[in-house]
Image (cartoon, rainbow, N blue to C red; front, side, top):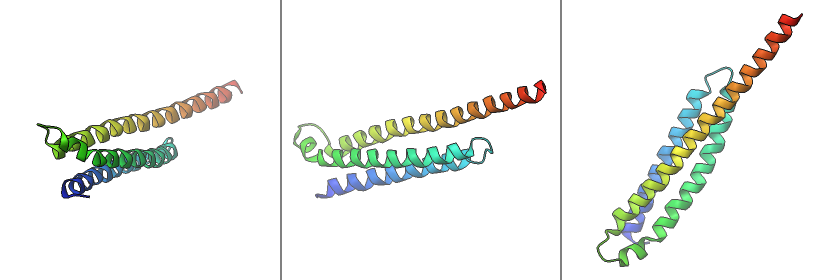
Length: 125
């Protein structure tokens, strides 16, 4: 690997690690809720695992494309590749955060439905 490829790979992996830590912190913050905490914790672990796998693949593929980008006239290959990495990781992170939000919302709806059912059964007796 050449120096630009190593720089790209290092910056891309640093960004990936930082975003994985943010997902873990979001899961930890959401796990404080007594009703949806288990779902948030489990969802954050699964989402972080999938995000890291896809993110590592994206960073690796873009680093492998760096020689192709450098052969194009007028493109700064490192900056172009960094833009691709930032776009790929940002899009993946946005999806991961939305998915975690949906997991917690679905868990809250299940708890609310169970609570309503329990209240109806107590009121019926």
